[in-house]
Image (tube, rainbow, N blue to C red; front, side, top):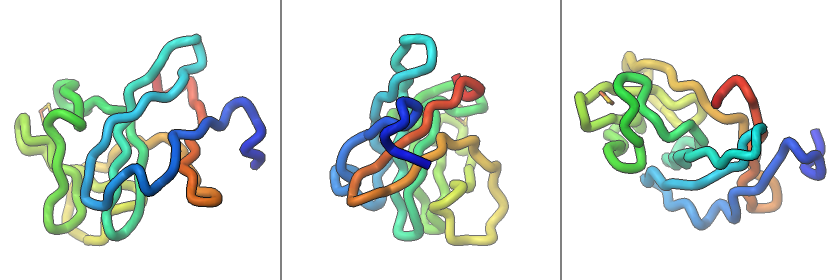
Length: 117
Ligand code: FES
């Protein structure tokens, strides 16, 4: 993996995304579009997900919050999601599809994936 590859792009310094937060960010899509993503940080990890609830499509950055088990809750209908990297519980939850991400030298990088958008 090389971060010089055009398919990797930076979302900025990791410290810009607070632990316990669901923060909006934009990434470039494969077709010249801009894609809304949510950066979700818990004490257990960091995830980047498409900013759209799989139930009815509201933005997690508008209606999402974290519960005590580091699960993402969409408060529109209270569906609960396990985060691929950031959930530290065995509680049941729906697995979210995430955007591949890496942290290198304190910076958060995401990999473009046409299947996500
Ligand atoms: S839209 Fe998110 S739970 Fe219904």
